[in-house]
Length: 402
Image (cartoon, rainbow, N blue to C red; front, top):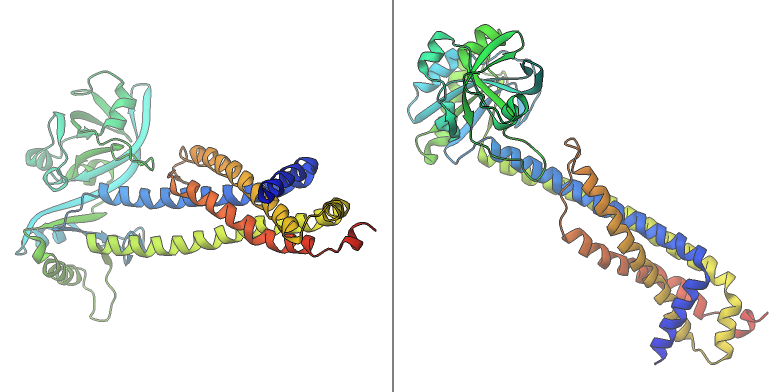
């Protein structure tokens, strides 16, 4: 009964001191909203990276070689011209190599009469399709004859096809890429948007020889995808590729590689390290946000105690014990924290939902942050409410009625 009476008194105190209640609620709300949004951004970033990795088409028997030194996706030199078709031929001749796919890439505008869009243009060899295991649902993929003749043909992903042609059949139609006209000969299978908003269908594929001589007008390669005969020989194949590229590029024994490997194992290691670093950063930011909210509660409660000293004195004169006063202010602190946590979770959900529409700042909404928000809210209310509650309880009746 005393607990229920103290709880009712806490509710009454919050109603009578609406200004302080509002300020305390806002403090917790901002902290919890920050926590949920930051976690959503962290989850969205991780999801986006994993989705893009999956879109690279890696299997346990494959790896890619990218121009430029550096780690994984982040080369130190962006405009390198190290890898050529001679490298491709030498790698293809190695034992243990099943498929080699040379690639060029550039983002360009493509136009169909009055309709236009910007998409990723890939210059690839016909081996791209079996290496990626990506079906052509309508039309056909270009072949070796198209490569030899440097034909101006293109296979479209669903996104540029839909933007340029709508419901019309694009097969046989002409589109302009830069200043060059291409005939649409095939449509790729639709993969669909990932949870993070990345669109693997936003691409167009042309023969590599065409991109080299007619469109990009450059002979160096962006990357080379290598598929080994078995996953057991991947490491051995990578060592052989390293030797071939260093020899072809004339690198001295002390010189750094002017290329870098991307492997499934390297990707997972990078993702794990990035996730750990991201989690540490999120923990730090979330802790600071909650500390700020807790300090706001504590300071306002301390001020409130001085303002409500007569109320405390009246309760003490009518028989309230120190434990009753402690419970009342602890209840107030926890109730305000839970209210702020609920409002902060709602605000965080709204902001996270809005951020999902921005590709540069992806957000992925999960249930865990909102469950944690209520747990942290209660913990903040208890921890930062203890000192004000004990201070209120320690006031003597003489102090309170002066």
